[in-house]
Image (cartoon, rainbow, N blue to C red):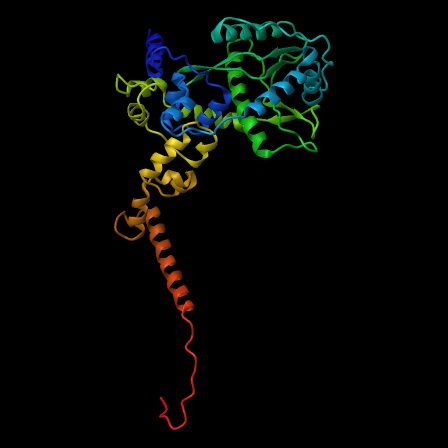
Length: 386
């Protein structure tokens, strides 16, 4: 009953007739990286289209992939999975399980079903059936996984999941950025690892419901184009660290129903609302803006403008915010540095005042050094010496 009421409440937050936007692993990884942001948690949990909301607020976001990148990625993925995934399975065998029998006549079950709930159930059934037939390879193409996020299910779709002959499971991520001389852009590899870690967590929840629970491997396979060609190559990526961080951050998320219960009854995030009304609704939920949001959230520009207007120190970055303790605005920081406010025993206040004194001392020395020396002029003949 409580779950039904929550779904109805989230539908009201989206607006009448507005379909829910699926929460993918990329968005979930970004949400886990900023667990203190209630605004993103409720908007993602309710399935609100943040891109449309940002446009309606007058702060459109440039966040997201270009259509060209999406088309190129889809074409490369189709090439990797051609012929029943023969090339993909070869790479899995070569990089992760070379001691097993080569993948010949691997099974590729049909995962079609109605709705995300049906697809998730069909995926769980296919994984269980693969475990009941040991010694064979199984490839799940675009399975659907359900992950509990702050009390609400998120449906995730990895590129592929491979079941090894020993019954263990491996996540496969297919990306269109190249591997040059065996290595790829570290930033892009890190983002792919964080995304794959979300899939690993979702697979672990599926495995926990089976008896005995199969092993979910923490080394995922990252498949990319080799050098400047379109030939696939692969690398094993250990995501244990990313998995642990993501699990810890997701556990810190405030439950979505708690955030929804704290909102006024008439709150709605529909992009069709007047700008003033939509702005009031969005601002009714506290945000935790940081510069890192610019590369991960569609509402980042809106949140940045309001954070700057409020003089919040979060606009300077999370490391700076962490060093300032209870000083939350730039005005508070400046007042503390001038000795006009703040507890002198507070380490942050003491450090600010020390820094201000050193700055004043340095500026005074610079001003003295900038004064040009007076030239020596000899006294004129007959003039008194001075």
